[in-house]
Structures are given as C-alpha cells and as structure tokens.
Image 1 (tube, rainbow, N blue to C red):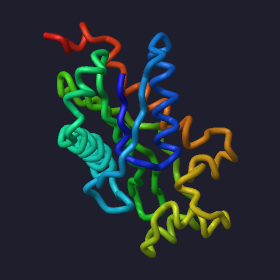
Image 2: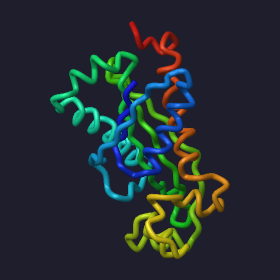
Image 3: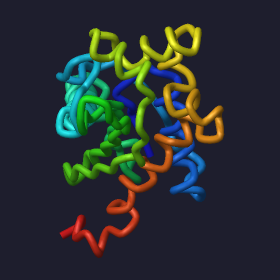
Length: 195
C-alpha cells in the first residue's frame, strides 16, 4: 500500500501514518510519502466549506502530481493493495462576531476507484483574544504564537493542543478524522466500491 500526503507538515504526515497503521494493522508494508501541494484556498480558511475544499484540493493535487510522475505506473504495479492520497486542512467558522469554531477536514482519495471520502474533526471555540487577532488578519497559527508565546505552533501542537494543554494533541485530533474518512475503504461492499 502506498499513501501520499498532500503536505510536508510533520503533524499531518505523522497522524496519517498512525491512522493507516491502526486501520490496516496486518499490512506491514505501507509506504508513506509526502509532497507539498497547493490547497487552492486562503492560508486561513474561514468557513467549513472553504476548509473542506482545501482538504479535497490537496488530496486531488497530490494525486495529480503522482500521476504525472514517470514512476507512477511502476508504483501502481507494485502497490496492488492500494494507493491513497490524503489532504488535511484546518480552518475556522464564524458563527457570530464573538463565536468562532475551529475544526479540520480530512480527505482520502483512492487511486483505483477515484472514490473521495471525507470526515471532519470535532470543533471547539476559540477565545476572544485569538478571535481578535484573526479579525486583524492573522492566521490561527500566528494568533496562537502571539497569545501563547510560541514559535510555529501550527507545525506542532496547534490551537487544539495549546487550549487543551495537550490532552488532545493536534496529531490525535486529525488522526481520528482520518480513521473516519477511511470507513468506506474498510467496508467496500457496503459502499459498493468494487462494482
């Protein structure tokens, strides 16, 4: 099995590995790769629709990049147990001027069927100080760094880890949604993927 993540962010790559290893524990030959591809959305998606679009675009862009490589036919022949493309995008949703929810979407595309599956993480509300910085034009990661006096937290624990004091790590947060996005591929008959 070959899994290619549409990001080189270590948290996104790591949680993808964990999710696939948990979902496919008997497959000891899963190969993981990562490639930075555009999401097609703003650096800070500001709606669930935009966030899902970003995750989907990442997964499809990494698939496109893979298929354009000269070695893709060799990889397809080698990885007969499946090739999957993963996109993960975090974003926010303004419910009102003072209530802003943060969540992420995960998208998995199966190369063989072209089936696109997605899932959303749970959401949580951001504190007023962070909302104010976002309204001033900062990305959530930048706002977190300012408020929590961190550096590059979006490549590490993210808002969810900072606000829960690492009870929920960013990797675990994304991992659960990836496991949910893999449901159709583990229930192929129910989802009629091989028809």
